[in-house]
Image 1 (cartoon, rainbow, N blue to C red):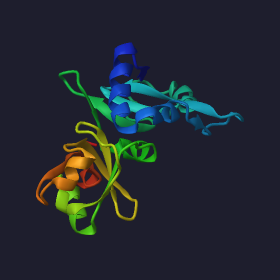
Image 2 (image 1 turned 30 degrees about the horizontal axis):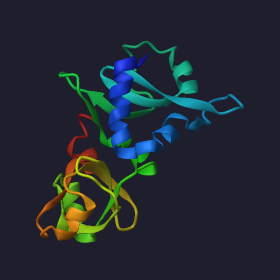
Image 3 (image 1 turned 180 degrees about the vertical axis):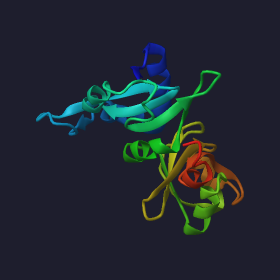
Length: 187
């Protein structure tokens, strides 16, 4: 497990920034109350076998006793690098993104299952949407009872959604909590 280099850090931060905006500062400066130290530590990003982890520094210090070959996971896996070198956020980063989300979409109860099966969010299933969404922005998808369901990329702006027909795509699906069941062997 090693720290991210400068280019890797830039790629990871750009992807997270797409979803949380200026709240990225809250993620980076989040105090960690793990470990025996009396004063809070910090969280950091580490790379292990092409997966990026969000982990407290005190846990990283204690994990140095474990060999790299034996270490399976540490902290929260927020994403992974593909063979082509691009970075993809995984569903395990949903807790981090939901707590700091800049743009949110709430689904009607009738369309929650469709999204959890991996389908895009349609205008007909949209309950609420935050203002000032631009196409290409990262969006966190919630149920009407504020339970985070997943995240995706906005296909239409907030103003365009008002004029859209009910079968028009509003959010392009990227990840949802149904992946814990569908892809349990890969997670």
